[in-house]
Every structure is written in C-alpha cells, then in structure tokens.
Length: 296
Image (tube, rainbow, N blue to C red; front, side, top):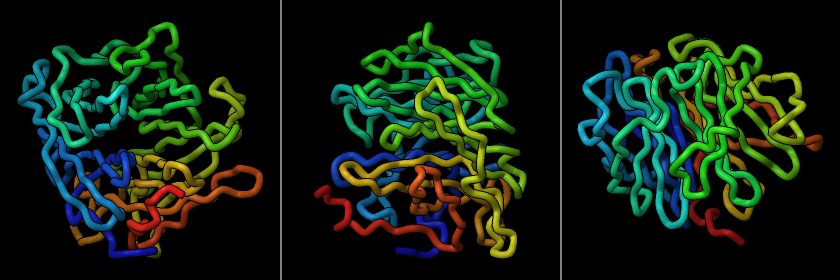
C-alpha cells in the first residue's frame, strides 16, 4: 500500500528499522543541516510506517567522549536481555548507549565503542545482524567493511571474530540479513551526495562465503526524479516472510541534496532461486497497515 513521499515529514537519513511488539521503531540521522551537523538522536514510533511519533533519546552533550566534533549519525538498535543498546556515530567514531526500552532514556558509555584508528577504515555506519542461536554481530565501515561478533550481552566486541573485506565498489553502510539458509550482504556505493548513490547485494550459504557476484538492489530513477537511493536497512516482520527495505534519497521537495534527504519504505521480494528482486523506487512510500502487524 502506498502513501505520499517522505512519510516522516522531516529531513532524515540512514534508517534502522526494528519491530518490537506491535510497533515499528525507526532510528536515523536528523538531516537538513550543513555537513550533517545534528547533535541529537530521535526515535520515530509507528504502527503502520505512515503515522509517526518522534521522541528525543540522546543528545551528544550527554556523551562523555564527545567534545564538539562531527555530528550525530547513523544509529542502530540491538535488543538484548531486556535492554536496548544503541550504537551510533559521533565525531567519526562509534559509540554505545543503553536504555531500558526502545524510547530511552539512553545512557552513553564513557568511551567510544570503536574509536578512530582502531581499524583500517572510517568507523561509521554501524548495523546489527542477529544470526540463528541469537548470536549478535556488529557491522561498520567506510572504504572497508568490517563485521565482528558481539558478546552475548551486546556490550563488547569479541576481537578474535573481527573480519573485513571490500565488496565490489563498497563505500559504506554494510548490512547483513538471513532468509532461510541464505545470507545476504548489501551496501552502498558512491557518495551520499552523488545522485547515483545506490545499493548492491550479494548472497552466500554462510558468513564465510562464497559470495555471489554483486547485483543492484536499488538505484536512482532519474525519470521520476528519484536520486541518491542508498544507506538502507532490511527488516523482516516477525513470524512472517514479509520483508521491508528502508532507504534514504534526495528529498523531493525541491531542496533535496546530500544534506536534505528523506526516508522511504518499500517491500522487498525474493525470486524462487532466493535472489533479491531489484526494488523499483516509487515516488511514494510503502505503508504496512497496522492490522497486518499482528503475527498469525
């Protein structure tokens, strides 16, 4: 089901969409400021991907190791043992904050979770993957993609599990999901300010590969004025084989560029052989009606 473009009615980017109970929670970068200079994180709550409530959950002034550097970017959430753990970017480093629930209040750790210089990449754009056995992983990177297993409580990286690669023309926003026995990695190519910013994907029978040749998942549709379709997340409705991709693009209000972006949602389909079906961007966004969120 479709609705108008920009369902959040704000400039936002870098979505992480999770479902807890019968509610969607969206964590993202607040946009519309020069050089992505927002200093706060908000969560958006909805029952249908259409009507949203916005709440502030963390200000960078509350982050002990932030001293006025680069802004608040690309948060993602892990639910662990009754707590919610937020991984986020500030000053070009990855931080961690913990809260009793998805709407906070979040309390930031005293030091960066992944500091600048820890690995051979710019440590930005974290994402979460939870494999069978409830094993959590964190992914991140710019220029080189990294993945590492998290401790069972989600509070530490298990350093002996860190691996890295440069898939295809990888730029940033690496994420992994699993459907049945197939793992899917997907990522953004080019620069978020480039109208041809786009998403590719690859699949494998395990996290160790072998990975298939990368294919396009979402790319710009210049004829529709839909540009810079990138930095996404992929979410499965619990208990169903219904998949949703959230991504950002240049806002379509005449102001759109790499600092004025909007988040939209689309259904994600799979072919009989397990391949992801390329998403054709639409002017409007996808609406998953509230009554359909009830797990059978």
